[in-house]
Each structure stands twice: as structure tokens, then as C-alpha cells.
Amino acid sequence: MFLKLFPFIAILPSTVYSLISLFCAARYFRCLQKPVDAAHPAGVSILKPVKGMDAGSYDNFASFCRQRYDGQLQLIFAAASPDDQVIPVIRQLMADFPEHDISLTINPAIHGPNYKVSNLINAFPQARHDIIIVCDSDIRVAADYLQSVTSHFSDPQVGLVTSLYRTSSVPGVATALEATGFTAEMIPNVLVALQLEGLSFALGASMAVRREALDSIGGFQALVDYLADDYQLGNKIHLAGWRIALDCCFVESMIKAENLMSVLSRQLRWARTMRVSRPGGYLASGITLPFPAVLLATLIAPSPLLALSAGAILYALRMLICTLFSRRFVQDGLFPRWLWLLPLRDMLAFFTWALSFLGNRVEWRGSRFMLRPGGKIEELV
Image (cartoon, rainbow, N blue to C red; front, side, top):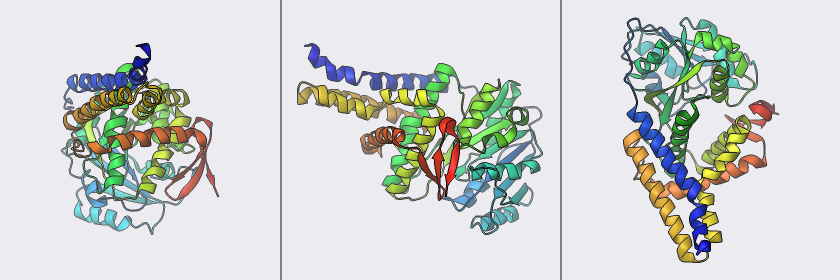
């Protein structure tokens, strides 16, 4: 009789973690308070490092010009080359929104192996306001984004505000495999971390930082040797004694059509980056992964029926929870349409987790890097 319980014990950690993530999400969204309108909205400088075209680049950029926000807004694009194909799009944006303070900095100066941070360092001297927002070039935002994000800075202890991101439209199976990971893994993990220990990191899709907090860690120069500049920015600000807030306004990550190999390469890069940034926590996260739990249950089950029963229980619960996340909390519309991909997504998560321990090389925007302990990188020639 005891042997018959083994497959169900194997799926217990993953099952319990799924239930915990659902509880944390329900608690977070239930306890949300609406942003408080500031009597004097803060001035905001948005830094956008760019390289090449993304899906819907013009509309992504234009969404920041269509904000319902009464404060002063400055939008600074930072490119390294005058031949970058996205520059005509930026020029068109400047012509279409002449009433906005939009500028473009083209500076090839390299300050370290992270070229994105080098762009930020080159553009930062133009930033005039005390709230600095860094948003990836593939991000599109709702009209109330700035009002929601800046409201957190009414608390003087808040040094950084970050935002959850989602993808609501995918152009194919390979990109759906990546996008479903935001809903099924990334967002639940962030909400669990928030509820259990508070945030000690930031999400690169959207990071709003108080100038004083940025200065307290040495500015963007403190990030230029790291690949995970978003994690490092949040972690350093957290260690400097500031609080990190998670905003309730989702931003949209616009994904262009890609093949499976490109998606797998990026997933492995993310996995290895997190492994060197948070080695202990990342190692422990393997216990909660569903795919190895089902695999272990199958291997130790005394009969195929018990193995099938354990797997069916885990995935019935997981599919229900992921659908709840998608429809109620994230509202991305990915599930139940792409629910059939969930076992493949879980298998990908496990193999990238495992492969992350078998090497330290990553590829990023056409360059190859070696990861060093603590998350620093060295470019490989």
C-alpha cells in the first residue's frame, strides 16, 4: 500500500507550489489599491535603448506618447549606430508627435560588455527628471501606464517600480511556447516571491527608478558588466535599502515570428543568467517543476495505472490553475487555446533548467558571452 503512494508523493511539491501560486495571485489582485492621483504628477524621463526592429516598433513607441498623464514627459531613444534600421521609425514618431519632448541619441561609445546598458549610459545625461523609466523596445503600454507606475513614488521608501508583462498575441507555435511561459511560470513565480519575501529584483520590460535610488548604487555604470541588468538593478537598489514595488498595470511584450531554435536559445540564455544570479534559489526551483515530477512518478509507480493517475491529477490541476491565471489575472487570452502546449512548455522549462548547469556560454543579439560567477559577462571574440 505504501508503494502505491510513491507516485503521488513525487508530484506533491509541484502540486503544492501550483496551489501556493494561485493563492498568492488571488491575494495580490484582491488587495490591490487603485493608484492615487498625485496633486503634482512627477516629471518622467523614459530611456529606450534600441537595436533593430521589433514587432510593431512604431506602435510600441507611440503608446508612450498616448498617455493620460499630466506630468512632464521626456522620451529619449538611444542607439549605437546611425545605420540602425529602427532610426527612420523614431524620426517618423518625432514628426507625428511634435508636441512631445522626444529625442534621439546616437553614440557608439562602449562602456562594458552589456551594450544595452552602454546605450543607457550614453543617453542618461539628457534625462532631466527625477523618475527614470527604462523600457525594452518591444514593449507596448496602456494609456494609464504612467499614472499607475508613478503613483507608487508617493511613498518615499520606494526606489523602484517594476511591472509584470504578458504577450496576448502570438504569430506561431514557437512563440506561443515562449509566451505561455510568462503566464504559466514567470508571473506565478514573481507573485509567490512578492507574497513570501517581497521583491529583491526587477523585471526588464518596465523599470521605473527614482534618480536618488539610482545614484545610490552608482548609476547605470554599476550594471554594465552584467547580462541580467534588470535583476541587478533591482537587487542593488533593494540591498541599498530601498523598497521595490510591483505595479498592477501589465505591459505588453510584442513578439515577432521566430523559429524554434531562436526561442530555445533565448530560453537557455535566461536560464543560465538566472542560475548565476541566484544560484541557490535557482537550484531549489527545480523541485517545483512539473515535468520531472511526472517523470519521477512514472519511474517509481508500481503500475502504469498509478503512474497515469498521478500525472492526470497533476495536469488537471495545473491546466485549471494556468487557465485561471490567463483568463482572470493576466487576461492574455492564451489559455485555453494554447493549453495543449503546456506539457511541452513544462518539458522545455525542465531541460533549460538542467542545461543551464552544463555550460556558461550564452548568445545575445548576435554576440557570444561567457558568464562569470555573480552574473558578470565577458564577450567572446
